[in-house]
Length: 429
Image (cartoon, rainbow, N blue to C red; front, side, top):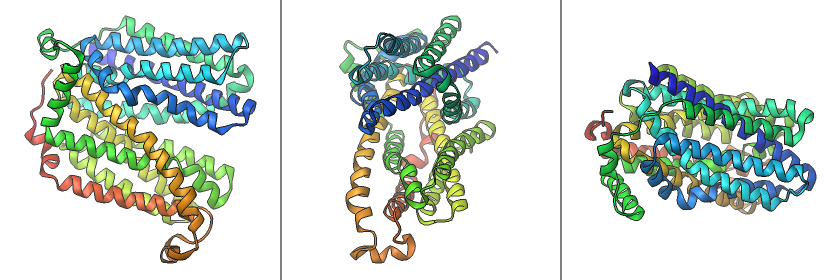
């Protein structure tokens, strides 16, 4: 009972902290664009935030495995608080510069490297095996819920308290999270297991963690498949605003589509938290990704507004389910003393894939697809995608869905992936 109380306190406070962070991000975007009119400044913010995980994520996981999970999460929240404090002071003193913002988000990205893997590893120690899917489903609800709540809170509070006020609110959520972390008790792996995981140097520990994962052929194949899916989805899904605007040029419709994305993801996470998925998780994962791929194809082809809403809602639903179930598989198949490294490596692969997806998607759309709509080879695609502005993006979305379906069929046909849960032993806490 005490562990369940601790887990729920952890989920609630981390969710509150995420809402505060999203509010600050939105308020900063509003402030920067109003004061500079430059979108490049905005696009570089997530880039600098993600650099630490891209470069050092795997190394951070070694620290997470060496430290207590609680200490790693406190460090993560403290880093977020410190960054917000720097922003607050520079704004209050009139010394704010874009370069300071880039430094702050880089620093916050550095500290968050420890927080995510530690939280996932802590869930292993706090949750009975039979409830992990549902708890991971609840955790997956937090991000889309923050995506729904943060814009509403920011829109209401920003005109009243301004950027400084929003940052103060964000800092308060970090303080609440840290206060709760100091109060609760989070068990760590048994001491003998922790000692088993420690070696002479960090590089050696990293190699051992990586070697262990590589030797688990089925699990490694699943993680690489999941990273590839993230690579495929990040850039195209970021086109939703541009795609909707090109097709209809209606701000209200575009904003409603963005809400549908968050609501779809939230609904998928809610479904998993109530249902728990199939007994063999890999079946739910693969069926879910086939659904995502199929409805992404429909989303790229259809021009009916109602069908666009339905397709986007349904294609988003399996994404948090997939993330939660893969997390559950890692939690039961990887020794607890090594989970920090594995979760950090998974995050690093995802963070590397994300900017690459963005960098590739933009030029493909702007320099190849959209300029050639209605010309030459496009005549073959015209009956399905049309010739109106946005048709090139529609083709990319549908083509991405087709690749997802193909990759999922290939992954599911791999016996090591399909039989992963039967052939790899579970670790009991």
